[in-house]
Image (cartoon, rainbow, N blue to C red):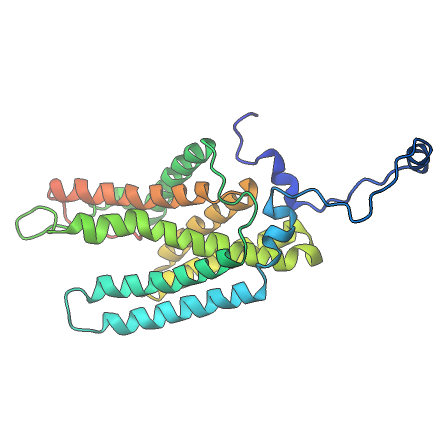
Length: 285
């Protein structure tokens, strides 16, 4: 099938061994005067899932930086949110993003995994399709068909002043970008890289996806109590995005999936507000 999710290189999750030359082939080379060149360069790998120098430095130090970054972000953001000021909520979110972003910057300063930032048009198709699919799943699991549209109604019946800047842009664009680069690049790839050679690509991929999705849920739990439905849905979002990265070797499909999931909720908020419908509250990713 031409437009399937996995690229031809998705078999990189499976262990592979180089083909050995037969003795007759080696003899033919020697007879023809072809000698192996000492110190011959290895072919540069173009997929981080196969290992190599581009991802070798994403080790325990990167994973430790991720834990430190998210810890400082959560603690610092929580402290800022206690300030009695109208800007405290926004500032606390920015502090959290700075912690996550610092870990991402540290990882990419060490090396850039081969192929991770490559973009292909198929990423848009899968990102939009999976994002809407996850939103439909959220509506079905939470019984949203029996609920009113969410809204962010101000006293005058419209959207609050500055809502687009303080809510829509952060939730629809910045949060998905920061969270995906943290959980689906730093955490996912670091765990995968640490385990790949010892347990194999498939087992390493499954473990990395579970760690990435679980951490994604825990981060959102720090912002307030989550219901079981919220936890399941957030895990579904994190797990889906992790699988996209593992199957394609690229990050943009996951980013677009997360963006579509969040933006679809924001569209419901706008429709609910303009339609003067009472609020409900599905969770954002």
